[in-house]
Image 1 (cartoon, rainbow, N blue to C red):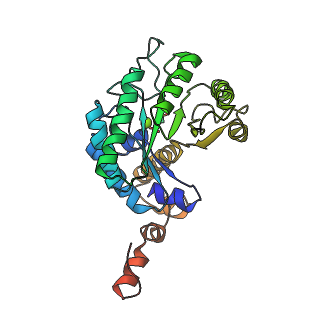
Image 2 (tube, rainbow, N blue to C red):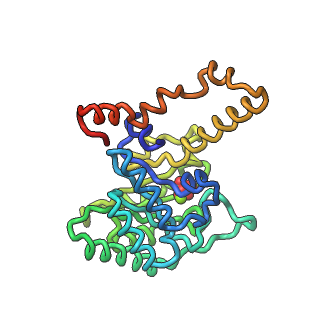
Image 3 (tube, rainbow, N blue to C red):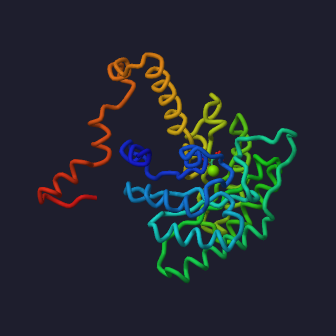
Length: 286
Ligand code: SPV
Ligand code: MG
């Protein structure tokens, strides 16, 4: 339902977050959900909206052969694209820092490029006319490898055929992504090649007053993923509802204070009316 809510509020696409999906299922964001579970659940999400769904494919679920099967399944489920990230398997969420503060392991860049290409080829074999988008994400910055390595990987993934790049950062300010964008735009000067869209996930720096999302677009970013806000607002709302009902053994307060959607809103979001119209013979249910 979160996807339909985002669509109704005007977003042009939805992010099938691994953090969101794993939390929903009560497991860790460490590949504890299998690729088949992710594909099945995200297929249902894609069925519920008209806007494109970009699925978070983590690091490809352990092997390029599995990644290829995964993207083919996503394409069959009418998902618009996948994001594959250059972490090792099982992945660690980028927002969790290692206790020792050390640089984190990343996948070998050449092997990661091979995985991107293998995924592309298997999609082509399966469905030659497909428009499935393969987005390559580098975690070089959050994993502590610095800007030169981030640029090196971004170039390699672009040259391996990625349709877009996610440049992740988990700093408190947007300085390092701005430094990336400056370098990247400089590199694109001279019209050497079509620009590859740059996507940002500003979770840690969006709240900083110095971060200006419009400036990031002006500097060359194409898309922002607001990755986990609906998940976090859900958790807060569910905790306070559970607490209120348990403490008072009554639902009166939450029914009255407007903190919960009325049931009519639940049925509206489920498109109950469409089914009833179809049952009367007026139109078809979606
Ligand atoms: C997610 O939302 O699952 C992401 C973004 O991959 S992050 O949690 O910042 O890694
Ligand atoms: Mg994720």
